[in-house]
Amino acid sequence: MPKKPRGSRPAAVVTGAGRGIGRGIVLALAREGFDVVGIDIVFEPGDRRKGLFEVKERVRELGGRFLPVAGDIARIEDHDRMLDAAAGVCGRIDVLVNNAGVAPAERVGVLETGPASYDRLLSTNARGPFFLSQNAAKRMLAQKPLENGPAPAIVFITSISAAVSSASRAEYCISKAALSMAATVFADALAAKGIGVYEVRPGIIATDMTAGVKKRYDRLIAEGLVPQGRWGRPEDVGRAVAALARGDFAFSTGAVIEVSGGMNVRRL
Image 1 (cartoon, one colour):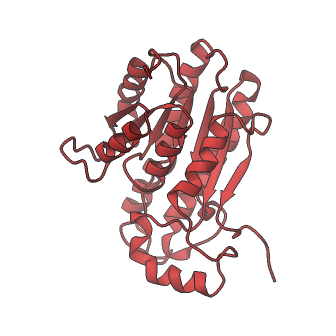
Image 2 (tube, helix red, strand yellow):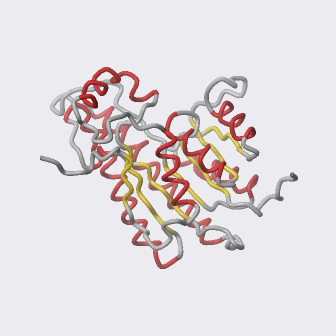
């Protein structure tokens, strides 16, 4: 079947697309018929086993289109280049998924948290997505709506750490709480302009980022920390984002969708 011409399919931009949750989101959106632009700080065209170019192969197998773009969202001066690349290939930007994020290089107590780690996490996890969303929203408002397509949307991937304290990684929790408020203010500002804004809060998800604490969380899950009794998977988050992107929650801007296996349930 011939592919539809440029600009005739909905297009999504996903940051941190080369692995983990970002990879799961890309594949879910590709299955929904989106052209996807994946942004990642790691850009190795010769590696088809992992990273953006492995994701590209998987999207191709699904019959979709995927553009890998090198970029660090913490570098605001690079945002125009990244979004220009997306618009140039896809002809439009309908969905932005702010997924890219970093964890502390070392978990330390809140009294030992240093300014370098704090600044690094706030820059990547909160400041970068704020200004990337600002840039993308302006482009969405300037483009012609896609006939019979979903309304434009911005999705912020935060964490249960936006509301749950981990004193050994205070800067991570603070950065995710800031990103959660960014989702709220963008939802408020863009509601009347026709752009839906949503927050997705993953819980304990099996990714490279959580591999170093697997034994600890295996034990906690076995002890009942997660009511549904298992680790989350990137595809769990991907399905939630796909539902938001295709417009299943069109009258729910500002909604917070927790993908945590029930960790949000208050229990005795």
